[in-house]
Length: 309
Picture 1: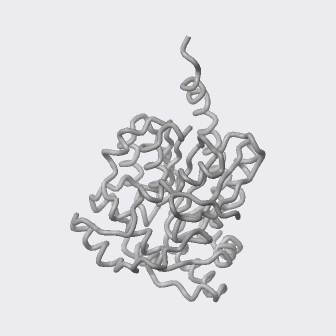
Picture 2: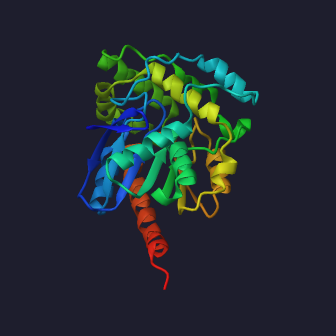
Picture 3: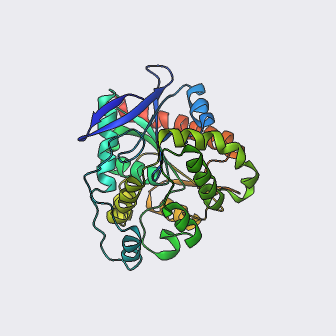
């Protein structure tokens, strides 16, 4: 993956598909490198005629790791957020959105269909709100609006505890794989638990790419410090699809419903049996639905570009 300069950081990005094709930008979630995107998602989208861009967010994978910044007390920050008190952070989702737009600039990409999972969905929402001209469509997957209401903002404590649990040393790849197996065994899709072992190659790829605990903590603070995004989301004009698992233990379905209510004209599709992961048994359906949404948004995008008679 080549490094590109964007917004003062180096972003590790990869482009899949044919040059000149419309672009789908995939934004990954908390602490995870782009390696977690399942191959069937990328392959379905390139097969549908799209160029797909994947990348590591700042403080993850091969992108800039902000080692000079402090490692936050995550539990204290969560407690403050639960009490609706302000949370300070080295950077916010706005900075991460600016990284992403800067990466598109560096790659010479003017507009893209934006697809984000979990924290990636939050970043995608900010891009769609603050940079509307750059966004052909938005797909927000298993994400939220920043609404601080407890039943919307946080899922089950067991799931939250799993994602903030200290990972093993990054150079012990097998231990990292086992850690990811445990985490996704908790936050993953209940109806597809039997597929967890088949996800091992994906976790092995993530382990080779590397987990970075301090970066994950700072990214979580970025979410908490950004706060309630609902007023911002009211300004999104891109055609928006909200995909959410019916059984997500980490970001509850109520968050997907609330996100849909916050984005004018957006549509919610609830995926039965899906949790906070991408199980192989659902990938064909999810990827096909993303491609369908992108195609349906393109006539509207072309009409906006058409010259006035």
